Image (tube, rainbow, N blue to C red; front, side, top):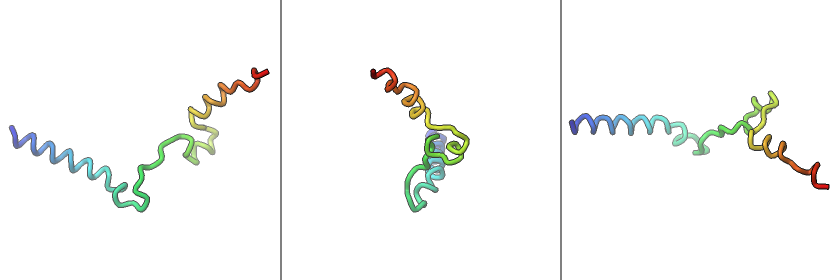
Length: 65
């Protein structure tokens, strides 16, 4: 039983290390940017960050009078 748990923990550790290989050995050592606002392909299609769209929609400059 202990052997099975130990093998499982070691397998999970190897998987986590394998997922981080690109981050560990890449020159910037940062996680890739996943925000919609930072993707050139999405900006080209006219898709912006939802947070920025929400702020633009709730801009109350028209009712500041």
